[in-house]
Length: 356
Image (tube, rainbow, N blue to C red; front, side, top):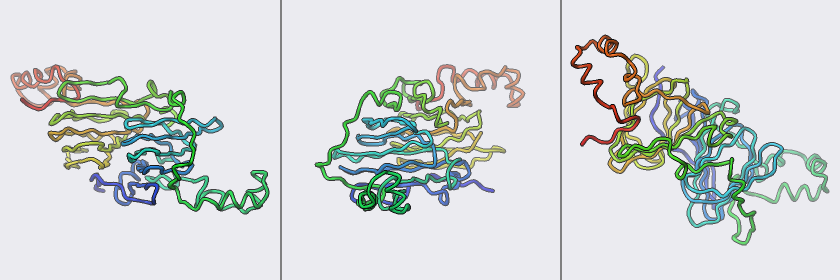
């Protein structure tokens, strides 16, 4: 069966005055279902409030734009109220309750990428809302609700029916919200634009890797992630995940070209990717990208919390580890050709600046 790896844009699922929720659908991006991966975006306008909810999937959230407040309740724990801004990555283990609020003029946009192996629908997130027109308690009888909360039935009816919004609402500017607590941020989130760089190659690019060392909660999520910033016209070395992980990539900024090669040396994807595109690289397939002159940034999740990659070009590539005799035999070339090959890329690794 041919794999359709064509990058796709998200589609609006619901929304109103307060903002909108978008998702990538497995019917249009089959690799989501194939890889048990979900992908969605939340956009909140000024005073937009994403009602409290929990999901059937563990996720990594990444703030693409703006700033705001996130409320997170881990199972049987107190509420954490985090200040969030562009570049923040948040690990959301299975079973957490979350809400989001934007009090600023700038639109707040949050990307969600996660594992759907526990989901009702492979390749899709299903959110369960605690309030609103489709909230959990709208399905219970007034008797059950009043007994569960120990309130009069009239109060229970008011609590359940007073919020007509679905998922996202717009609040009055006079509504008071809890102030974010900087102490709550620690251990719950990491700003990928401010964190120490794991890779920094002049003229090539930069990488910040999200793993169990700098954000232990990703271990509970079961996913790793990284933010890659590829300089103008630079190239990302061809490489693959050598621990059978899928790589799910969202283009945050800029544009460029991508090629993916699969089994039998077959190129399965050659495409121009741009901001807003999502594409998935299957297990063991090799991917490489070249940025356009303005550069290209992308945020990826990898379906293991501490991913391991093998690169096929550059100083740290597998070729540099092989003996000259093996290279000559493998390529079926004379020694002088192998020597020219081996003498290249002795300094650069992972990212290659544009040719001079």
